[in-house]
Image (cartoon, rainbow, N blue to C red; front, side, top):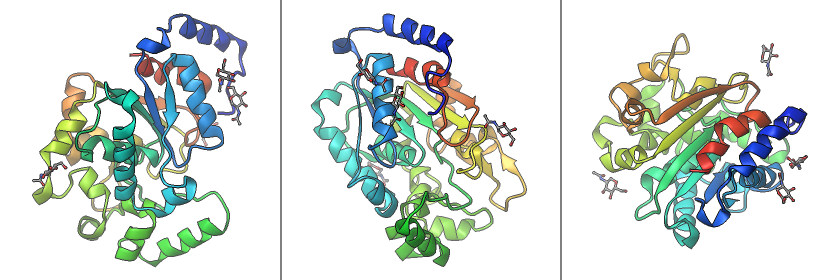
Length: 293
Ligand SMILES: *[C@@H]1O[C@H](CO)[C@@H](O)[C@H](O)[C@H]1NC(C)=O
Ligand SMILES: *[C@@H]1O[C@H](CO)[C@@H](O)[C@H](O)[C@H]1NC(C)=O
Ligand SMILES: *[C@@H]1O[C@H](CO)[C@@H](O)[C@H](O)[C@H]1NC(C)=O
Ligand SMILES: *[C@@H]1O[C@H](CO)[C@@H](O)[C@H](O)[C@H]1NC(C)=O
């Protein structure tokens, strides 16, 4: 976010966007998901709202940053589901912008939530959609230390799965049996277990109007960064990386990604910068337009 408003020429773009904005009363609301709503995140929500002319809010899960680390993702997705259903302003449909781990909560909401208002456009910024092969660096403090120690135990251990949110999307190449047997979140979200694929999850995901997958070229938090586009390592190990279109999730279309792609509804966007460090002009180009429709 450091690049915001650095170059005056960008102000012209802002002006152009603002003047072409429909009145707020006609626009579709959006919800933002991150690991917390405070600090820079509320500012980002406000920026998106200012630029798109659409009302938006950040949806807090539990108490914010601590719960998003320690509450299992299934609980987080359930909480998001219940909250969204109570927001009357979303009943005609809404758009989602999600950052990092917030993408897995957002996608859980889209796929698992019964009787939910429809999600129209979904913009994903640095989402670990296909899993991560290394534990994300936690910023600082004693809580990070506890989390990191717990994760060193054994990622697919029940206790870790129930108490550390990111363990729900750690997918170690070469350990597929353990992953499929014991991971409590991602295999379900991605319809990975052959005997448990649920077409309802797929149909819900396929009903999106636009799916924008933003990958950060210099992402050092997500390993591999291509997970933002659903690309991942082969099941055997770290030696080769499959592009989105080479994965079984895509080819066999477990969640409807291919179906969406076939009709031109998936935008694969690659931007410069490290994890979530999206430049102002990229926000204007790749995020704001999907909040105005
Ligand atoms: C919030 O956004 C404004 C305008 O984009 C920026 O100037 C300011 O530094 C941001 N504040 C924080 C705390 O990120
Ligand atoms: C959004 O617009 C309001 C009202 O013009 C302004 O006060 C606020 O600083 C803007 N925030 C950002 C982050 O652009
Ligand atoms: C699939 O998911 C839907 C929605 O949660 C649920 O109602 C249904 O029972 C599930 N179907 C199977 C076969 O598990
Ligand atoms: C991305 O990483 C490359 C190689 O480390 C570096 O040369 C480049 O300056 C980085 N770009 C950005 C935008 O951070």
